[in-house]
Image (cartoon, rainbow, N blue to C red; front, side):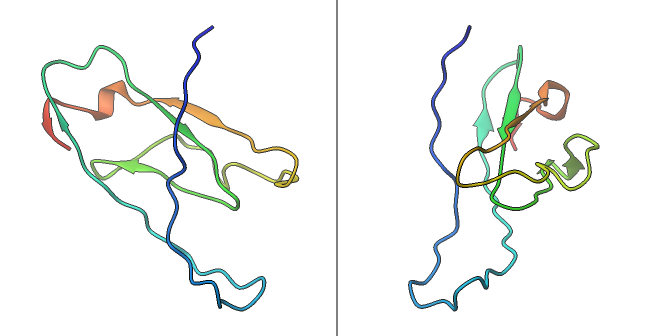
Length: 91
């Protein structure tokens, strides 16, 4: 079993936003990959629903991911093989 850690990717939200009112966010970033990519996985979850794109291509075909769950108790994490969406160089 592989053990991995990650940090949350999240937008900055003002402390004075109205209760239970959260806008939709687009989170984007980039990276540079050296050499061939042997294997790449994307692990995603959210407090709400999400769509993920890499290089303009949608990741997966599941609608309304991650689906309903009791967010205070458990988060569903989906894992996608994204090896074929990555190429050496700037992403």
